Amino acid sequence: MCDTSMLPQKLAFVDIETTGMSPVYDRIIDIGIIRVENSTVVEQYNQLVNPHIPFSPFIQSMTGITPEYLEDAPAFEDIYPTIYELLKDTVFVAHNVRFDYGFLRNEFKRFDISFSSKQLCTAKLSRRLYSRYRRHNLSALINRFGFTCEHRHRAFDDAQVLWQFYQKIMHEFPPEKITVAIDHIQKRPTIPNQLDPGVVDTLPETSGIYFFYDKEENLLYIGKSNNIRSRVLSHLSSDYQSGKQMQMVKHIARIDFEVTAGELGALIRESYLVKKLNPIYNRQLRRNRKLIILKKITTDSGYDSAVLETLTHIDPDDINHIIGIFPSLRRAKNFLVYLREKYSLCEKILGMDASKGSCFSYHLGECRGACIGVEPARKYNARFLLAFAENRIKPWYFDAPIKIVEKNDNEELVETFIVDKWCLIRQMVSNRQQSSIPLEPVFDMDMYKILTRRLPHLSYGLHRT
Image 1 (cartoon, helix red, strand yellow):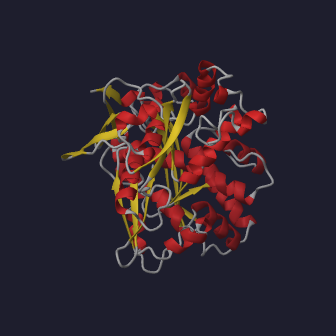
Image 2 (tube, helix red, strand yellow):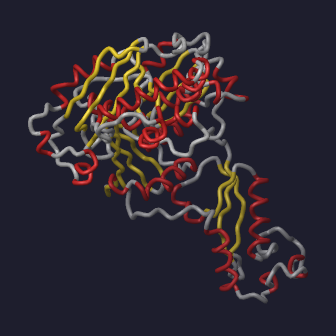
């Protein structure tokens, strides 16, 4: 066997069977753990678990576990101290590790236990080391390498397969290659010199926003994620660093974070704080001091047209007349030229041709004569509306303000957003303390984009006020 001193010395090979796929609503029914230290098995654990909830015939057929098998089995609350000790200070190894790790974290969380561990996915490790093969599920590994597995889809037997796979790669590959593969899979971070390495272990694996500061406490960057810890690690991982990001990372001296109830809260909070605090490395969400808008008007002849206006803010009551918002005058004019050519609009009616008589495009056959009354206004206006339909501000879906409620998994944190005419007018946060933040009802393009993308998927949390 090769020298494994450069490899992780404490590993827990874990497999679980569950009542379903949701770590929030489903429960563990079978768990197998093999704890290995210095390449030697030191403890093994094989336990059925009573979930105290029903589970489908499909799960029963796949695992061979029936409710009758579990009647006398302990509940998770009876065994979690033992499981915690088995997993403590180890690298958590599983096949498609996010599934097993996510379930166990949620099980611990129900008893106010915060569990965190480095993770190693054997499926990714197989793809990395055996890239010539197409399939890397557990059944494929068993068949390919002749591993022993007496009862497939039973937790302890599957955990034994993982240990057999790890032993095989230790025999087959030099430790340097295995280490490189593991580092790549784990995206091991390069901690900046001035950053305390222990800060990474304090980051939560929940939705929220995070802040990077330099040693002078200048705010470098604000980001958001459904998993703060994972996203911060991706910033610090060397294979993610390039250009400006690499420059930013080397100056990080402190990391802070705010937990939100879910993705919507993280998006809204990021958008608001980037505009308010103006971090050095945030570009896309920075506040534009001036906005160029296209507003729909009607000419004296009854033809629809558009005028360009420069505004510092947009009144929510005016959004029904806005058919385009742009960061610069050049972008707005280029957009008008594009639509004129694509939809045969009249450049004179659009104010792009000040000559008398017909516009120049009419002589080229690109205008249908609206400029000289040849094309009726009704027909022209229908095409005009079609041209701007995709880019215009959508009308507010509701006849009154709405309330959007977002909760985290255990419902300890609840955020409520009051929204009207695409504007966030109040935000309320409820955990151990209540807070309410009234906001000025000003139309914000980033907020508009967030809401239009997510309102169709948030119907469960919508309430009319």
